[in-house]
Image (cartoon, rainbow, N blue to C red; front, side, top):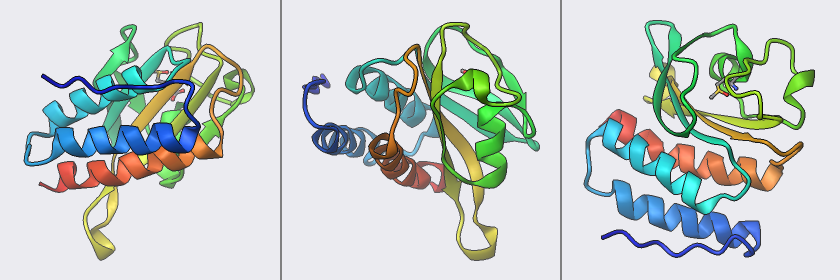
Length: 166
Ligand code: SME
């Protein structure tokens, strides 16, 4: 039913434009947050080459809990002061880590992971604005992610904001 065409050889700008259009089509008119996270995880997995994990951690009761993802089973709970995910959720800033072994406190859910991109998802307005989840992408390649990936996934995180505010 959803047959999105991908071209891993396309420039990243095109790749992310295509990914964003597909994501918009998938979440439009669907208020269920889990269904939307699941489809977006599948979409990242389909569109982005060189990944070994793609998915979400949700902020629940002051910690992070595993959300929908693609890849091997992963750590279920991550404290806010742990790992790249915790650092991104706590600071509200994108973390692009070229070598996870050089990141103090990195959590090795999958020993194959060498680099990682984590982008916070916000919801709420004004003083109520806060991080509700993070998008986590892992790769078995060193320095797999660059500024274009960060920008692309930040656009996706912005789109997801509506899913968490619904
Ligand atoms: N790599 C993350 C932990 C989650 S798994 O990689 C899926 C981290 O250090 O935050």
